[in-house]
Image (tube, one colour):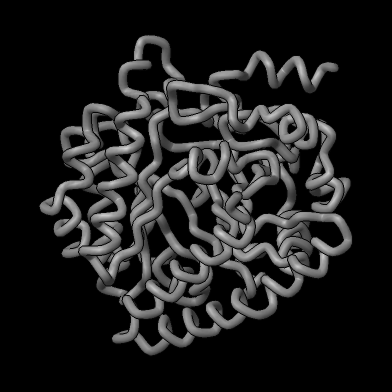
Length: 361
């Protein structure tokens, strides 16, 4: 049996080491990456080990949805479908001070990374300013890229722990078809500004049965490299919209994707490739509900993952230790729910009725 926490910690260290090598020509970025590498290798691992002896298993990273609004209306958006985000605020959100205190607690417990999502996170500059002060954590910000301009470039220069990850769907036709006219062109302009500023940034690509070959081709990856992109998240499509189930991966697609991503990691040394959810079978099931990560909603609700907005604990009110001991999380792990059979990119989304029953029991 693989030690999941150790497996993920090792991979996070490898990610930062690769990032360090990719920015050696930029002294400020290189110094920051080296400092973060040392923090993750020593302090974070040690803090998690101490808490493990106390009976609390702390995963290496979080996913946090910090915004409830978005300036786009992308097809198949899980945040809109799940009520996380809309054109106007959909639910109460934590204050900048509450988010900063939550991440300071996370850092003290050994969390190394928190992925920031929404909605569109860049609509909440007030929150980002406070979160950025937690320097011992790395914050990849999943953004559509349309709000990045000179002011945000300066923000990213000041706060190297904030890493923009710009969403694409492939080429212009595919991106604009899902995200709206001109979005692809605006996203590339943002990448150009970040590249000219010498900043580390990445991209997030939703992978489907229809685009998997195109977005993992040598030619497409070379184009991302040319644009200055150093980090690529491949995220399997979850069929939120009825009638799109054919776009979700089956077992054969998952196996193909695993092999292709490994080829890219071997062949392209100065880029980082992350596949999500990735090696579920290798890791004996989904990593949600505190096994490898959990999700914190805009109001502080601790949820198994972004695709499973069920909660019985509030991380801001009750603290992260209580969140990790969530009765719902325990039920999901004890029932082996994270290894349920599924056909799409998310086990818990496909079995959402069963999760709801657990929450109500």
